[in-house]
Length: 214
Length: 214
DNA sequence: TAGATTGTTAATCGATTAACAATC
DNA sequence: TAGATTGTTAATCGATTAACAATC
Image (cartoon, rainbow over all chains, first blue to last red; front, side):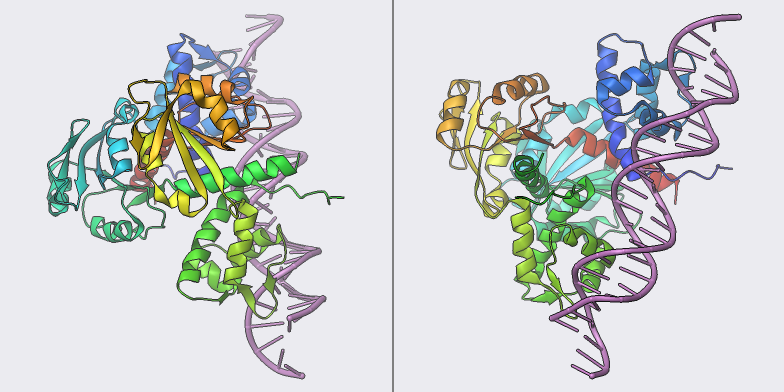
């Protein structure tokens, strides 16, 4: 009998990985406890926000003591679902696809890129950073046979839209979308967008208003 | 005598590039006007929000008619500061740096990647997608001589922190930070972070809660 | 125990949505 | 003109901050 879960806001989810990163750094510096007040100074947020955020998931601290760094780090890891391995494929073996394949930071966090896929038959069979390029025809069977949960899409817009539709009846649970388009998927699939074009537009806007305003 | 500017919230800036993208698509489909109501259905947001957002910058619509697509597209382009060219350098000629160099979408929006930089002397002089790798020693003079406004950092954490400090007394106005760390820069420099590790952690969280919850 | 600091409730602030008069 | 739709004010909703009793 599950207790009805409180709805966690997007803003909180946005902050959790940053908490996790700072805790990881504290941990590697040998710090073993921290108060919400000290943590707030380090991160540039309010202590209230830290305590409110964490208390959505449980009481991880102790009055008069603060938070145990290692424990909190692990708890947030569990919350984020990175206490286990996630198998990933990258569809689109262009520059970005290859860059993802070669990015070792993901591996450290349990995100394992198992294969690249590309429709270009001249690329098929080649290997980047130890990851082999497969033909599109193998997509469905590869996902099923290798317990793949996440597909990163590093293909052009039109291809991404098409792939979203193909992936909906495979075992894929999450799409990491690098194409500059919104994807239509059933509720059972989660989409996380990385829209670099939008990111650089925001940079441009902020540069502009920084110089004009304050 | 400038009128005191209303503070524009982060949430609005987050949405502007998406409006811009949809307007660009409507434009290429030959649509020449749209009401906030139709636009809201297309984008999956409320019509109220669209009107409120836009009215922070001016009255771009017309009662009884709606918005002229081409006009609104151009106005938002101006707001975002992409009605002109921005010169960019990419520091770190690894996989991601090369991927950025080869990504033609930026060029279309006026973001011109002029040079790559790397500390590895064996890479210096090589060219990717027509963009040459320069040695770090040339960084300052290159920025000054080529009117560079934005530096994309595709280097490891420690190098990014160091570079942020080097860049602060050059003409650089914006840092596009791909390293998984926060950067300390003076107020005159804007930082836009692309933290892929945090992005994939959010994907993981959402996959987890999707399967548990609703 | 006394001091520190959490967990949590209450107050504030800001962002989103609704409503409607103005106007094309 | 009548109908449509904006710009904008007011109402609601949600997120952040402040305060403090609980407790280690």
